[in-house]
Amino acid sequence: MAAAVECFAQKGFYGTTTHEIAEWVGISQPYLYRLYPNKEALFAAVVDHVSVVMTDTLLAHSPASGGAGPGPEAALDAARGAYAALVADRNILRFLMHANCAVGEPLVAQAVRRCYAKQVDTVRRLLGDDEAVRRWFGAGMLDNVVAVLGLADIDEPWAHVLTAR
Image 1: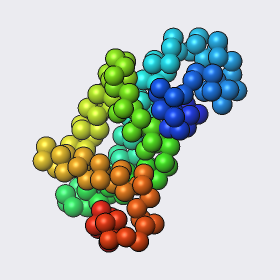
Image 2: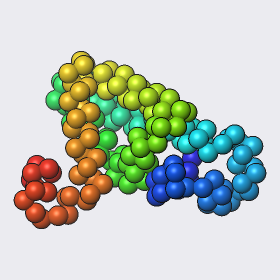
Image 3: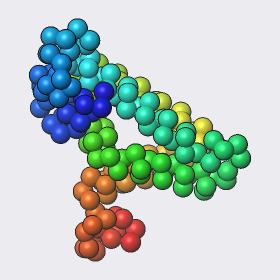
Image 4: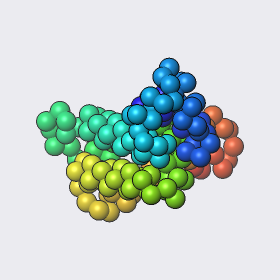
């Protein structure tokens, strides 16, 4: 899965070949096709894998995981910190962006919808209500742009606005 995330993160669903993934993992392409019937099924499985990684990361870093019931601000701060650490691995972030772009493929669309559904449920459990979930996703999309463009390293007024510096 890690190799597929990395390969798909570089060129996306449409630009990555199953031969490249098999070569990266050190297996034959026919063996890859024994594991997954086609590239779409492999990509959907990788979306499901990343969804589990995201959920596990958010739950593991939740203040509630220590047994104490945090306030909403503490829960939000912990969730944003966990997400920021997760997408610091640019491969995860780029893969997720490519997944959103590949929803024209039916299996991929189903997997991406499952991923969003799982994240909504997880964030609702952590933060409490639908409005908090919407704020989380809005802030997360901004965080994605900041991370993928490397705006923390850009000393320009417009970058300062987006990074809240």
